[in-house]
Amino acid sequence: MFKNLINKKIILASKSSRRQELLKGLGLSFEIKTKEIDEDFPNTIEACNVATFLAKKKAKAFELSIDEILITSDTTVLLTDRILNKPKNSQEAIEMLQSLSGNTHEVCTGVCIKSANREVIFSDFTSVTFKPLSMNEIEYYIKHFQPFDKAGSYGIQEWIGFIGIEKIEGCYYNVMGLPLSKLYQELLDF
Image 1: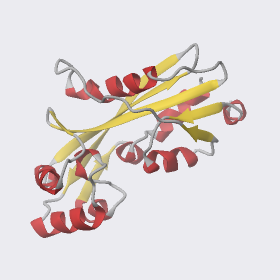
Image 2: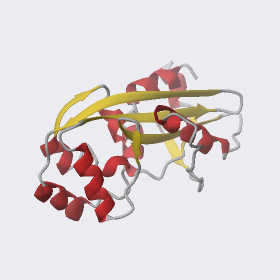
Image 3: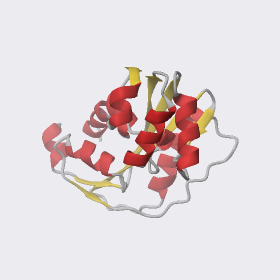
């Protein structure tokens, strides 16, 4: 099955360098195509379903030929029922990291794999626990790593992850933006 997969034309619809790096790690050839998508979602959607809703919404923007497989995804950070999106500025990043400090939160990545005649949508959840973070640690991280393109204001693979994360339960790569093992299994069946 892997041999069939490496011969398919795969499109990753993501500007995220982290997702591109992760997909390369699977040994697959792919090209990047992106479209600007309005990432709004109805208030009636449960927080745990927002990532899959947005992944599907992103996939709808593409028309595919018979030999193409499209991968779209979205990652949300959930603290209780509150979604922590990408911070708009330093103050918002500080507030998010303060709320995550000393707490456990969920990271959900929704993925849509689509071809001309098939679509599969799935999600993966990872539980992440931060130690209590000092204001100095938070300010240092924001100043030096500028996490404004990251849901929840942090990257697990960066300094704040090294010094601040006490425990994760679930897929590490899911926190980075793609649940690789699940994605690989779904692609094999495509």
